[in-house]
Amino acid sequence: MSLASFRHTTVFHLPQFGIGSSQKVLFHEYVPQGSRPFNPDDESLSLDDFRKERAYIQASLHCDELPGMLVTHHLLKLLDECASKNGILKPITVLPFANPIGLQQIVMGSHLGRFSMSTGVNFNRDWIDVTSAVAKSVADRLTADEDTNVAIIRRSILEETTKLKFNTVEKVLKRELFKRAAISSIVLDLHCDTDAIMHTYTHDRSWPEMQDLAVHLQSECNLLAPESGGNPFDEACSCPWATLMDKFEDRYPIKMACQSVTIELRGESD
Image 1: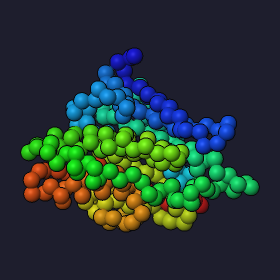
Image 2: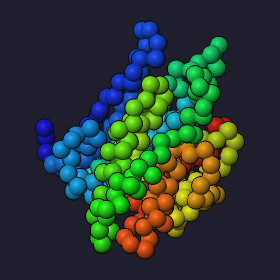
Image 3: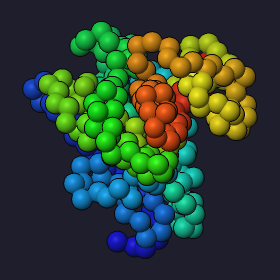
C-alpha cells in the first residue's frame, strides 16, 4: 500500500433477489496520506476512528435522475487528480450510483427509478431510524466533552444499524448506505427535479452552516425543516442528532455532527 493518497474502491454485493441476478454497490473512498480506508464492519474500530470528520456524497438514489451520476463521474476525476498530489485532507466517500436496484427497473423502454417496483416504496423514503436504540445505548456513556460524545454516538449508530437484519434487498441496500453516511460529518444526496431551479433541502439546525454550500452551488431556494415526513435519506442522517440534542440538552453537550443536505440539480431539461 502506497503512502500516497489514492482511491479505495469497496464492492458490496447485494443478496440475490431472483434466480441468476446479482447487484453491487461501489464505494469509492479517498483518504489522507498514510490513512487506512474506513471499513464499517471492522470490529477493531476505536473511538478515535469515529472522531474523524468525513464527507459522504451519493447520486442517483432516484435512478432516473441522472445529472447526479454525471456530476459524481467528473468529481471522481477531480478527486483522483487531487489524490495524486496528496491533496486529500479528510476522508471522502463517493457513490456515483447509490441504487443499482432502481437502475435495472426498465420496463418497455421506460426507466422507472423513483419507486421500487417490488414494494411501491419511494427509494428516498422509509429510511433507517435507530435513534431510540442509540439514545438508550449512550445514555450512561456520554461525557462533558462534546467531541467525545460525537464519537460515542457515531459508534452507537453504526453498532445499532449493523444489528438490523433484513430479508429484502432494498432494506439491505439502505442499511449498507446508512452505515457509511450516518457517521459522516457532511452528507450530500444528489437529485434532479423534473422542472426546477437549483435548490436544496436540509434540517433547520444545519443552517446557517450550510449557507456556504448554497452560495457555492448558486442555489436559488433553500428549504429548511426539522422533519418533512416519510423519513427521507438526508433526514435519516441528520434528525437523530437533533433528537439527541433535545433529549440530553440539560446533561451533555451534543452538536449537529451530521450536516446532511439533499441537492436538487435543477430540472431534467437543464
